[in-house]
Amino acid sequence: MAIRQIRYEGDPILRKVSREVTEINDRIITLLEDMIDTMYEYEGVGLAAPQVGVLRRVVVIDIGEGPIKLINPEIIEEEGEIIDVEGCLSIPGRAGNVKRPEKVKVKYLDESGEEKIIEGTGLLAKALCHEIDHLNGILYIDKMIEEVELDEDED
Image (cartoon, rainbow, N blue to C red; front, side, top):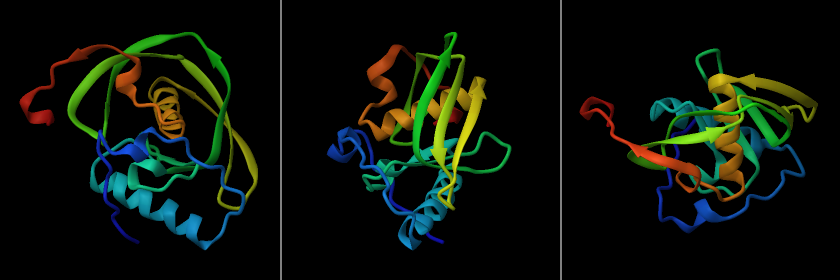
């Protein structure tokens, strides 16, 4: 597939609300594959379609257990709260503490259009919330409690 150009903070597309996917066609499947390739190329944990300039409700995540592809993801349950450090491929060189739910349940469509539910805790819950925020034009820095210093080798 292809590596797509990451959009960075200041790009107006990152602040727009993504449109629902009404038909899962070849373009959406290609977008998902390209997003996975792009996420791996930039060593990310997740990527939302607006980050590659596409205003569609499509997200990919890999917390080390293989890629998850979510179409029209929607948080249907939240539990607890945790404050942890986050970064973002669209905001390189910065990180900050963000309060997120400790556990989430997300309803989504898979590539074949089947409705599924995924439950996440820890890193997966954080990634799901972070990427779904992107679909609504929200960046983690909007929710950041405090910025944290990055080590030189993490940049």
